[in-house]
Length: 273
Image 1: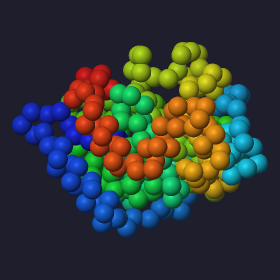
Image 2: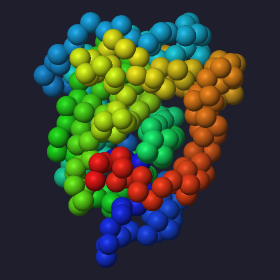
Image 3: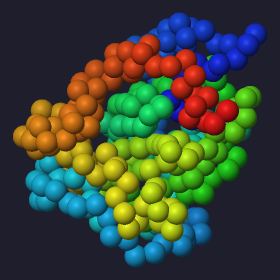
Image 4: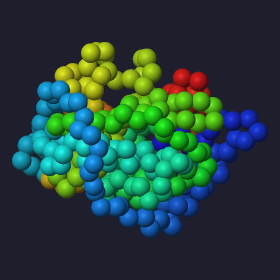
């Protein structure tokens, strides 16, 4: 799971100061990877008729994500989601990188650490650190494309030295097919967002998604303006949008603060170990 800053191991434990220094060094230095050209080729998923979350601020730069219709086939979105997991899988090619938007955001619900990346380079940097310092594979993946946002949704299992870590994850895209928002939950009882076992992909009931509430993700390019009128208005009404906007103003600082305040066993709780 991508939010994991340090594994809880015995003799081989990676000290948190080591990972923090490595991450900050990569953020400062920057990486040079570039996104590959999008391609298609997966089998078309089984998609039922969705209802979706409501569109807000339609026709403005503050439009929410569900104001957009897909501009690519479902298999493209599923493939892009799988490429995201390639960036965290040591058995996958390091050249397999999704088509990230420049200010893509990653939000991971508790027990994970909320905003764990903001901006394309931050996701590339954290992936490099995690592959080196806390390696995992992602051998089990069920990623599907949908015709309402989030356009890609996945059930996956990360494999760590301690065992499997089941995750449910969703991916939002702009009109160019760039990934703009990543949202993750632990796929364990009392932690997964789905309340209805007959709606595993959250097509008919709202999952409380943050991705469908953040203004700007439904603009054609999905660019976020943290100081926009729509963001301020939504923040005044929605404390979780307000929290996102605050964290996005300095994501690394808030990420480390959240880590420092977290229970040492948060990762084991999220993975069910």
